[in-house]
Image (cartoon, rainbow, N blue to C red; front, side, top):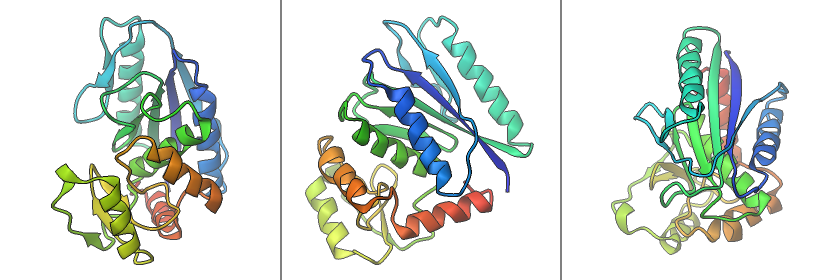
Length: 229
């Protein structure tokens, strides 16, 4: 099993405490596997920083940088090098500025989480981080029973909740802006309405006392153990 190095990059001009929230979530995430290790953190400052996807590999860039782009490229080069060694890198970019109409976006080894659309509430931000951590570790597994969904463009939370009720306990997944779980009390479920990240996913995560359903947790442990995360 390869070692995993986590790096948190925080750009938080709204002072939402994102760096601390992200570190707490990653520490708890590692605790699911009995692992505890230091997590690298990078704080970015500025008034007009624009962070966007650089390319399909998931590197990030900013307009007219003040060293930020160089840091990102350094992390990117280090990560590529580590893929050939005994360590995997996972990078979380957490920000309080809006990044389009998304809560999070992930691509293999890097994820961006924006608190702008959801809430300043630390618990809801934590839910979004658990969600994207899951995605960069390839859960829910594509090997699970997938529900055909031809209405991705017209999907809404009412339809998603209907799918969750219909397929409860079947460990099913469906595709809507990525693979998502249909099991109850799982942070890997999908919500389109930003308010429902707090009303549904966060409330139910806190009630369950765990971030993932049993099947997603099993998928996660398998992926990490077998270096398929």
